[in-house]
Length: 353
Image (tube, rainbow, N blue to C red):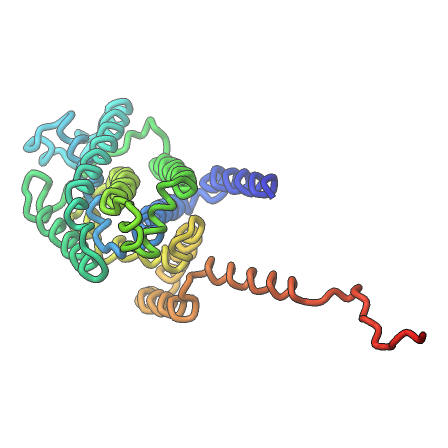
């Protein structure tokens, strides 16, 4: 079993590395696929493993987007200067400058996202159920409005990120491998976390938070740490996503609650929330379906995708992976109780004296 699992991981890694070379015309779509995987996995930490339906995780994604873009701008340009050169040749940085600004922005974005998660979580995560969901929903909307009214980060006009240096190769391929490594790292970290005491604590909160508290578990602390862990990966994805898109809009790119914020929830539910592979499967199916429908059925794509999501939620409430596990467990149980054909039937005749 372990050998087969290791072989599967190796095959998946080889396929992921080869994908942008085998399908160069789809590099941007493949890069976005890994972004979706990170979003789904990050949301499932709180929404699946812990059972808290958060609609505000896009806040940490947006913090990463803006922090990285602002750091890149302010390291080498003034605010007024950049307003005149943005998007032109003058805004193109040397390769080392670009990489240094990007790396520093990603790190600072992750740090700020963790601080925001810790501060907000200390208060918001004391709420439960629909109160928590509504509060986080309002938080995402508020952050989008604040960003849209702040001139320092471009306000409603948005912010153009520095041009990608040609000496670094193809932009889409560069960000493809970044998002791929981030998705692999996120998956590996969560696989380790879910196997340790911390993962058990999150599941205990999901199953019965009152009993977990009665047993001495400091639930608010565990919930806050889980939100901070989610914030790290969301900020790291957001910081590079802004550069990948090339333009930061407060509502459509950074704090995109109606799109990315909702999609991360749908992908986790579609694949099977509360599992490790479920969000990955859901992200892949959702993204491929969205790209296919957008390409061939433009105008009907959102309606069909919404209908598909509704059908999965109604008929597969545990998600695709949950449904597969139920079927597998049912077949195993049926095979266990089925009498073996080789078992001899007891004789009904009595022996004569």
